[in-house]
Image (cartoon, rainbow, N blue to C red; front, side, top):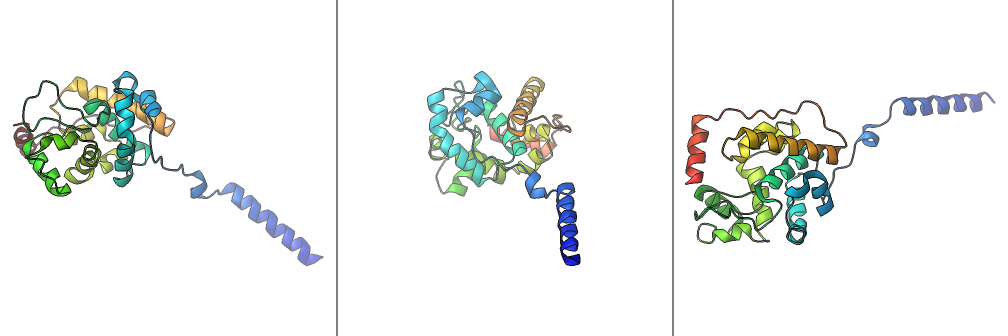
Length: 221
């Protein structure tokens, strides 16, 4: 009888401790592995491009996010907010009035001879001679992954909610209105993907160093 009572007491204590101290695994939200067209519209509204074109590219885009470990709400929000503004999620996007050989192309608008050369070397394709490949269905999403994780290291910036630094790393010309717009898109994506907008978001774009200015001028030529 005494052993039975002790066993019941031990079971009761264990149950109480588990109730008071739930495991971290139980509390952790699973990473999102893919997004749909409806997800994109919920986040970015009419910034999302033609449905047929967007849905054609989504499998490659979701695969690129998975390969780049862009699977947390913070990382996906930064990445998708960037692509919403760069290409409207069209894998074949190209600046309509940009006649330069190495104009912006693809999901992330790869721009400049140096970037075409480096991305081509990474994937084993000659983007300098065939720049249109940068906006092909086969290469557009992988190139965006390369730029996000190899040419730049943007995931850690997204982890810290440093959208201003994300914008600086993407490298478009400094523009306060565009910076603010991308920040709003980042917050809208966070609300959809995370369930709420966390505190601590920093949308201040850091001042460029002289070397960075020279690099961007070279990319723009």
